[in-house]
Length: 251
Length: 84
Image (cartoon, rainbow over all chains, first blue to last red; front, side, top):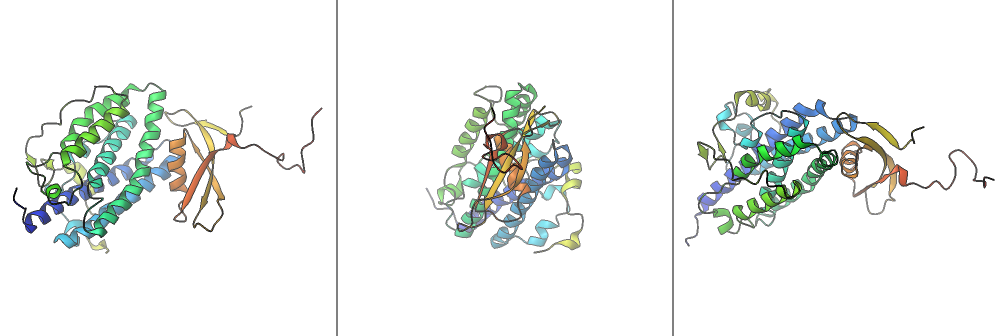
């Protein structure tokens, strides 16, 4: 097997980290938009805390991407929905509380599973950033587990249905190109296919072994491997996530 | 009468419980009571406590169900006496 050149590796890493950062940007906006659907005052505080942490992950990743040739202001000020690389899973807004928790769980777990592949990255600042993201994602996943327990105890079927309906889009996000360059070069600890299997197993385990969501990844027309998504972010979502005051970009 | 450590049901959720929150900022600090939190289960209590009491970057935080506390002295009393 030939060793991939430095430019190709840099581009692959940039694409993966930008897909992660943009997905976190959208997820943070999910949290802020849905905060008033929290079940109580402490729930609002938890949702706002998770929003803040997720915005922080986004900005930290954007700043790291400067090392890979990205322009920070350019990332913040993108003016077209086509410029964003967020996961398709988060395109469609939540339909109810169960769908919200199911989607947030799938997104948080997918992002952490994906990011954890860089825990052993040879660039220690990146590995450290990923570890910090993992420490904060721990609480986000625990929040989802708390609600999953309630749905299980109360026999809430809407949650399982929402999880099963959203899972194929979540699995599609892991889709790798023919060769996982980053893994081959020692920059990703495990192949994406292995991370995807681990992700699927954990989600199905959370469903109590139910096979309802055990389908193949979604077949998405127009899949763009560089942006790790199909098509363009919906305009309505773009209006929510776009930077409202371009003059307010701070470093 | 409902015990004080049992809260009301949350919107769309089960009844909540109260938890006491303890934390320390450094290894040298004692684990001190920082407040209480209401939640439907242990997982949500941990997350809510973490985000509500985020005034310091805690090195350690614990939550304890208020119902687990055993009072050694009665509240406001100088000492217990054996009831006959």
